Length: 293
Image 1 (cartoon, rainbow, N blue to C red):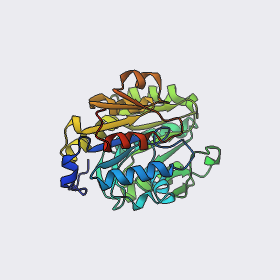
Image 2 (image 1 turned 180 degrees about the vertical axis):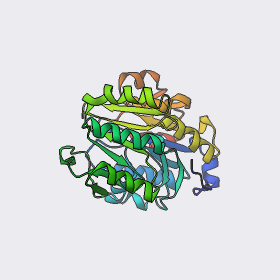
Image 3 (image 1 turned 90 degrees about the vertical axis):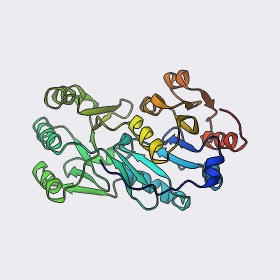
Image 4 (image 1 turned 45 degrees about the vertical axis):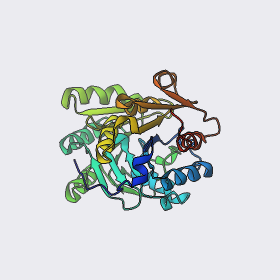
């Protein structure tokens, strides 16, 4: 686990605001998946920051994917943000790219799992801080939500493992590109590394992801709260899907966007209209108006 000193240094204006921190999910909350972040949301985040607020993104995506999004719409020019990647396995600063906190996967598990997946013809990729490692026989072009300009291609599993060992790269997430292999992989994990791995499934897109059991958005929430020396009443979390329940677990102010799943809507303390994916801008407007949410 990594930790560095606070790089945000909340100012006196922050201390005067009722809601000092907003932690927002990314896809289908801040932005419609596959589209750019609405400029209205960008302007609202900027205004929130100018008034002393801290804005944070929490997502299952890897850091290079979010970095591309930030650069594409000049979000990188906003004040420093705390970015939670890989479902809380990696927390990083948006501008300095400093690792603030991490929970990587056990190297013993990675090596044994790769061997097992090779024996069973399971397609996968390995996610480190800056790279996605994949075998050349795997065609990721079919997975249109992925953009692998950070991809490293290997001839076989052995060379991929050798690279990880020699470079001592931490692995934050493993993507497995067949939901049909879920039971096979899950049974293997349960018998070889019980209570060590957390699994996230995406049935709609046909893949699932593995991270350390110590990761999760609930861990990210607790870290960021301590990092900024805030209390629960000063923090707002915003989400739409099952993996956002981790943000809800310890939060007092649980905001659901209107397109959220039923479970989140029922557990929320406030619902913000998000039909045009400008819900974050509406939420921030309410915060700056001094509304109680």
